Figure 1 (tube, rainbow, N blue to C red):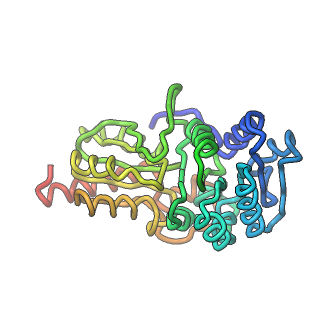
Figure 2 (cartoon, one colour):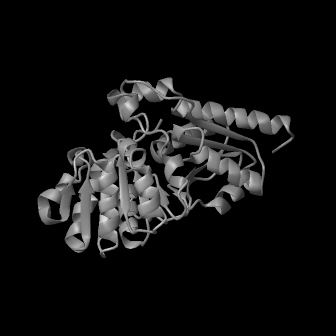
Figure 3 (cartoon, rainbow, N blue to C red):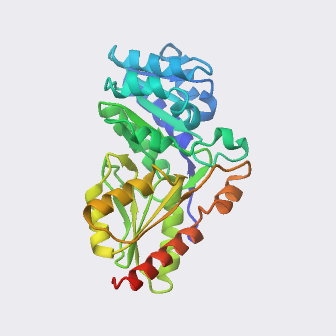
Length: 319
């Protein structure tokens, strides 16, 4: 396993939002009583006249963000992912998605790595919810550098965005010179035996799994799918064609997330064996490391899934 530096993506969001606020006076921020946790308070401290804390009233927060958007502003609505997608879903659907409002939603503390806050604070359905909204751009950055660039792209591009970040520090997998491209997969490692497709906190374990496989002679391609909507189906189908098997890895419920979308793209383009590393049920309270291990979201779990894919390829006469 490679030792990598880490960064807290929610903190990177707050720092990037502050920098953008200095560049564009049209940016406004609405929050739901969790601005310190999302680091949006950095913006509020610098620009109090453009910062609105509505307390635990997420439905009102989304409606206000839509209003700001149609008044020519660029609103960022920020809160925990579980509160920012589930509770105000009708307001997001009608007031933002159907209206095509230029609203940017930041969902922090996503997945089960939120840790000790327990199951009620763990968003494991949010990707499915937001990808079910036509016209919504859905981004799950892998690390700090990708988060910073994704926030800037969301600010520049018109239309609704949902950006999903984490509570805990995430290994940094990108180096200087990386450029985030909306709607495009990123090849982090070349390989011809199978492809591992990951997003968010599972990108680093995917790379670790590929490195472990390489020590036994298996070359795994690794794709980082930071944009889940619009999805880069061409890159997925090309990987299926060229490597003959796919593993997906995500910190999300197995239904409706990355695995489901990749499987659909593969079935429509080039059917190959697919294994999914994902959550199969709600979790519980514990440290992030304990939860990721107990619920099968580690590099070892990704490697085991890869070996299952290789076995299925062999039994079906694949390469």
